[in-house]
Image (cartoon, rainbow over all chains, first blue to last red; front, side, top):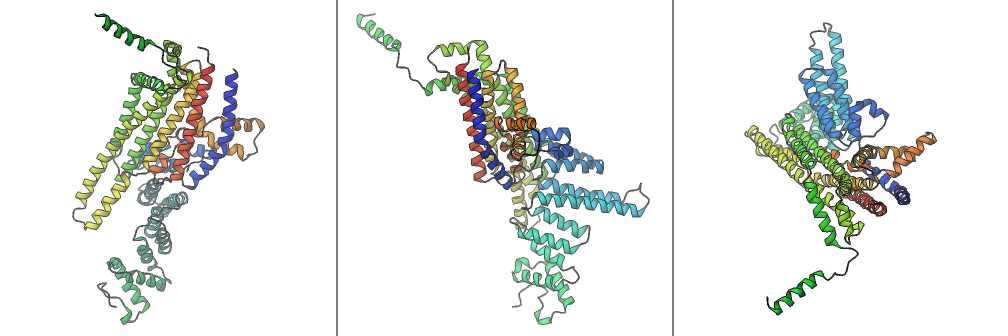
Length: 255
Length: 311
């Protein structure tokens, strides 16, 4: 009995000692993007009982994968509502897995939106367009939340730029997100180029786009790709650039 | 037998029976108990059931993953490392929980402690046997995981090379590099070490509980609760320290959880490592040190309580 009480006392003393250590370690983990999931009532409501228990027991990755496989099956059955529900749980469980955010956004903005637009059960064109726009917005929401959880990685900025370009035809926002991706470490070498391409479609920003494309052109042969030359030519014509200042058609240096 | 031969035999016999000076602490005694415990544990059916279950789970991840190669590798790594974590945690609890009660039931403990073996050495030898078993099991499962990952990586590389046979060499090299980057990540190694340390922590905590528990079932049940509460400890600690305006009873409960239980969430780094988060030396070293600290403290507490236990 006495030994038990002494052991309890030691445990409490040790608890007091370890508290600041554990707190500092938790802060360090969060700073380095570990412990992305905070356990609270909001999480419980989002995940449901099974997901919450899984997250609690340290097996959130496995549960997220199981839900991902279910989402894949739901996609094969074109159950878009179920997919949305599953992907919300998956991304809550594994907020650092870019693949899940990207796949969720792709399903919503590309697959579900096309299905909504071609929905034979909806005779009204306006309502089909409305449903399509709602799926675009859901895809955008996944990517924006993904970026919020992973601000240090370029892939989701690139995906959001693609979504703005292909679905919203908003080249200005697409250029902005490619530019943001380009500033991050591990960015793809084409992000800067794609940002300049998108800018070249924006009314009123042709001069800026021309300068950026030209500066890429000046970097040498590796950047002088057919699309870059095509966009430069387009801007040269639009801006009325004097003939002697124009770049070569083939991309060979004239200087 | 001549008279000379008899003298020499007697001399040898006397030399072997002359009591050597008893040492307070002996590594060889601990080693004997450790190797004996390891042998006993490897004979347990539950060990093989769990090991086969873990290996099957790792192997089955190949068939679960009929997706893109990124998705496939993600699932393979998640499932395999999850299986390793689940198996080592379960084994740590189950193997340790039945160790002391079984020795008492079989009366092995009396035979050992009747010899000049201090209780400290007995407990340390026993837990060292469990930790050795955990290390062996982790190594076996990691080897299986790496073999599966390597096989899948090679298959994907081959498919990619075939698909991109007509592409320029730099594009092919980029594609192959991307596949390799998604497959094995060197950061997985510290993640796996942390899984092992967590299992060691759970084993020593189970040992501590079993020193005052009345049966192995009781110990397992308590440890299941400890496992779940340990994963909530960080939340309880934050609520308690931030004084979220709750009542006295709630705050007392939170304080008990925060003080008495280990923060098991601290050891769940591998999920984020698989997701691509890089683990720094500082994070690894501090997490590992915390685990070692817990392991040592719980072992010492187990020894302390075991010294007072009436056998």
